[in-house]
Image 1 (tube, rainbow, N blue to C red):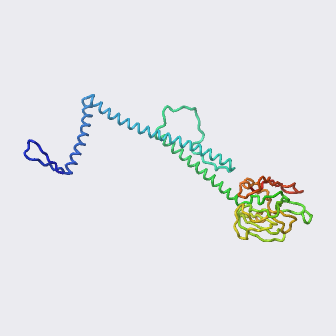
Image 2 (cartoon, rainbow, N blue to C red; image 1 turned 60 degrees about the horizontal axis):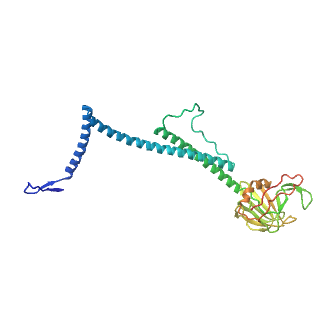
Image 3 (cartoon, rainbow, N blue to C red; image 1 turned 30 degrees about the vertical axis):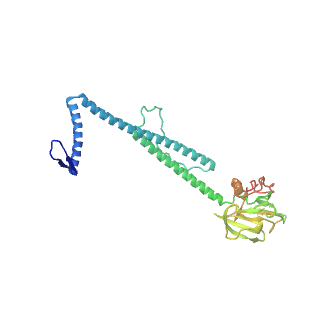
Length: 336
């Protein structure tokens, strides 16, 4: 960089060459001069006890302290707000977990208590607010508790999901919209032979052609005519559970087909060993007949909310008076 100096006293112009090294030296000199001046004022004020120098140093120090205090105060305020938010979040998580546990009937896993054991003593309010490090420790402690509560809700969700899956794979949906129940599970007088016999299912009395739905999802094991059951469908639901639908007038599924809960699989009829149009429904575990009412009563609410349609204003299906020596009485709602 070239600087040309022109003066009335000079006959000719004078050129000054400014290099980068020179410019850097000038800047360094100015910085050094400012530090030296500040140090000089401080030294003079302390050495000779000059009030104006002391006031100047004190004013600079006071400004610096105010900025530091404002920064710390803002940080503490932010941490206190965050601490309050975490406490509120923890209360919401506890309340939510308690409500979900009560509504679902699933007990939440026991949580490990974070902190010390028995504590007590008189309540004496602190004269000073929590320091920054104390606030940080409290935030870290609450963060661990919030994480622990989140794990609790996750475990509760897993239990609910597991229960829902099991419920969908258990035959708990009423398989037909019936007028009444003809025979319950247990001992009865055989309607054809007229002798005492064991009835291994429930007979739902319904008009010919009333649609029959799968009580739970699974794989069709049998869909064919049987000498005793007539047109029969048997569905494997897994975990050694299966259900049977007998005396059908129509078969809508084939062997090996995967069916969903509530899917139409056939229609009621009067085929096989039967005295009239109805649906014979069985639930079996490891091949042994179980009382279907135990499962259907568990699934009443699920049946009410199922996708299967029903006749408007239809009343709940209730069992007829139990036969002598009958094992159970059936009371449940038809699918809607």
